[in-house]
Image (cartoon, rainbow, N blue to C red; front, top):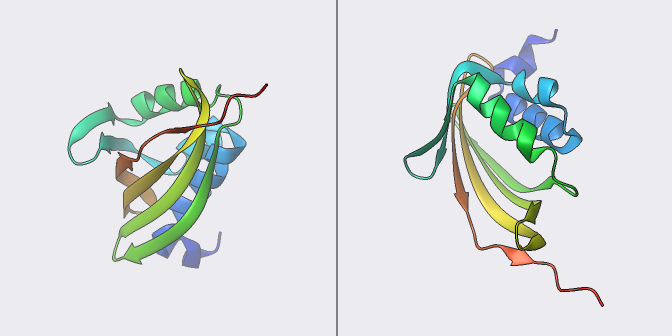
Length: 127
C-alpha cells in the first residue's frame, strides 16, 4: 500500500465518507480506531468504541436515500473539518441537514469525531 495516503489525515476521512455513501459497514469501520469516540458537539458522547459506532451506522445505513455530500474540507495538523449536506429519512419525512464534522485522526484511523447538526429541511410534500 502506498504510504503517502496514510500520512494524510484527510485520507481516512475521505474513505469513510465513500463507504458511508456506499452503505458498506465493513469498509466504513476500517477507518475507525477500535477505541474511537463520537460526540454531538461539543461533548455529548454518542458512541464509544468501534462496536457502538458500528451498531449506530448499521441502523443508519438502512435509511433510503442516505447520502453525505461534501461541501468543503479543511485540514490542520491531524484535524479534518468537513462541511456536508446529508440526505436522511427523518421520522417526519425525507430531507436534508447541514453537518459540520470534526475528525481527529491518529495512526491513519479516526480516533474521535464531533458532529454539529444544523436545522432539518424536509422535502416539500408531493401531491
